[in-house]
Length: 73
Image 1 (cartoon, rainbow, N blue to C red):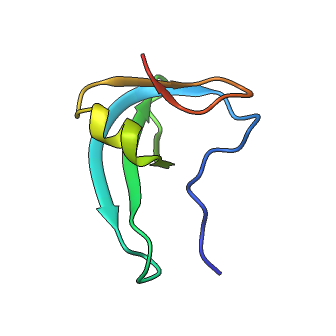
Image 2 (image 1 turned 30 degrees about the vertical axis):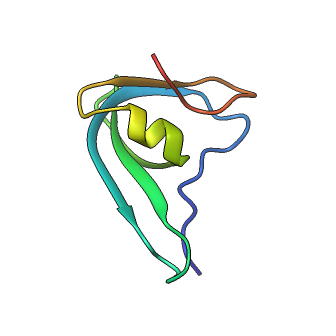
């Protein structure tokens, strides 16, 4: 079983992008990920859609509010 890095609909967090990556994990679809450092010092890996992934850079702040997707802050 694989781990899903897609944020849940009720999740809420914010942090700084530390790294960007992408890969074809299933051999057919391209997935886009960022490594985020939250304010509490913890790191998390999050899957983003292509448009947001292309619009952010390392050092940018992203925010996830309940009921919406991650967004550049």
